[in-house]
Image (cartoon, rainbow, N blue to C red):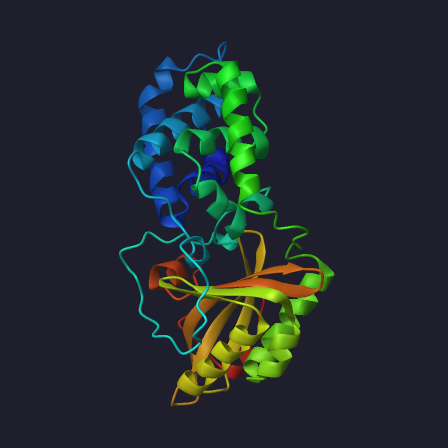
Amino acid sequence: MDLEPYRSELVAYCYRMSGSFHEAEDLVQETMLRVWKARDRYDASRAAVRTWLYRIATNVCLTALEGRARRPLPSGLGAPSEDPGAPLTPAFDIPWLQPFPDARYDVEVRADLRLALVAAMQVLPARQRAVLVLREVLEFSAAEVAEQLGTTVAAVNSSLQRARAAVADMGDPGEVAEPDDAEAREVVQRYARAFEAADVPALVRLLTDAAVLEMPPVPLWYRGRRDYGLFMERVFELRGTGWATRQLTAGGQPALAAYAPTQDGGHRLHSLQAFTVGGGRVARNVVFADPRVLEAFDLPDEISSDESHGTR
């Protein structure tokens, strides 16, 4: 039984369930171990291999998530800050939502790996989350999901309705451009050029009126062009100008790896910025500076100036 062709989609599934890329890989390893141990009991007349794998993966996820707190973004914890000069104190006790490193796995559908959607799903009870992903994203039938969860079709349909309603209450992200959208690429390229030039007015012109900036593990977040711009002025005052960037994607969203200038003229990896682009503007920028998050993207620790703007 060759399980490797299923690994990428299982990692994506476990990521949607857990909100953590690192945890997702561990959950898939546990799934593969259980599948290997139970391989002699697999009955092809009862379920396809893929359905059987997802039943085991779902049980692994539900067990791991029992009693766990959800993984939020800062914007899911309270009102936006109105002080662009507030202390940037990390909150490492919060299990923050992590981005998905697209380059690590070949996942067919990435739209449902977007940070805002995964954050919304984190609000759901784990079983509702499983029903929503299995039915809406992976398109299993209600009967298959009932088999996977050991419940009834009626219970699955009821859970799906509640899950849809709860996610809808979190707000509609509207038309979100994919990374391969030409307009989205152009917006992010213009953002990268303005960021490298420390041109705050140019950055602000690329934002929607209610653009959000958040920076886990710092619990602060900002809404609106004014505060976004004031915070970016603070960044360049504190860390200097002459940054470098590399373009990539994270969870089906355009992203930049940001490299801060060093005293010797080089650039050291500082953060990953994941953008929500819609209507030709940046609506959200989630900036990740956690070393474990950066490690997952296999980014070089340092780059030279002529490597800036490179796409991965």
